Length: 393
Ligand code: PXP
Image (cartoon, rainbow, N blue to C red):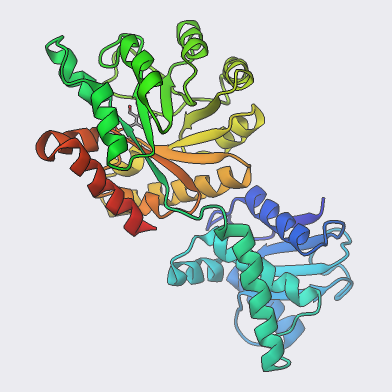
């Protein structure tokens, strides 16, 4: 293993996604042309860091990061030998700095790991102003390559027109027509149209999906359950993107993400079939590391992160918790080479923070836009949401 990551803290709080940090550090080694080298990264509490700071640098108090080249002091920190040396990071201090900078803990840990790594390969900001500048430049360009080049534009808005069909089905009439609504969404600037063809056909009908396949000019995203009937339909209609979702007959709306881990075999077979027929496949999942890993393993092109818990959070503390989970999940999914969509429950108040996450490719929003469209018109409702997404970026 190139990056040996040792968590020496007595508690795991604040929580660190070790695998993701390891992956980012391995990517940094690659960007520096050091893929063949090995590095030890040691996570410490502030108290442990203060002890090492005193022992090896005769300094009082803690610090955020320390680097020790290989062999000095001989195997003091890491269990095994490594080529480059040891980078020690105080996680509580990193978390505090992340809050001050308004970035994620993961982002701050990667910044500190890189800083320590650059010291190990000869950069030093304390020797002169020029060297400090050179180190700063190197850090910024590597971080840009790692984090900030994933998306150059704002996330795309894909409008879910299911509830236009809900209104139509209330009278089992011909209007309003979700196909016409979809065209208005595209005219207003939406980059995709989403429909969920449910087993009970409570809103979208087969006729709608067939017509939309012919009329949608941007991207048609068909949400569906993993059933034989739906798979056959997708194979015939060939939407641009298929989003696999769990479906219960009695639910008002989709209640949670797919359990890809528990249903790996069945979902993998569906993904394989659809991918082979040329479709992109997204899995609608909760913001959990094991679901993301399973999605990547079975060859999905995308995940759609379920934002429902964040949107329905009771109070700011819960909303913040849910947001941090989504942010971590988006980072992990992108680092696992998945494209990241997000949706469910997003509205004109809560979309901005999700739209600002750099990993998000597409936002799937339905109920809020259709509800507003009833009052202000579809094109205006879409444009207002686009403004929010644009400003968030
Ligand atoms: N994404 C998925 C997977 C969904 O099932 C739904 C609801 O149909 C949405 C996004 C859109 O949710 P909302 O209508 O709350 O915007």
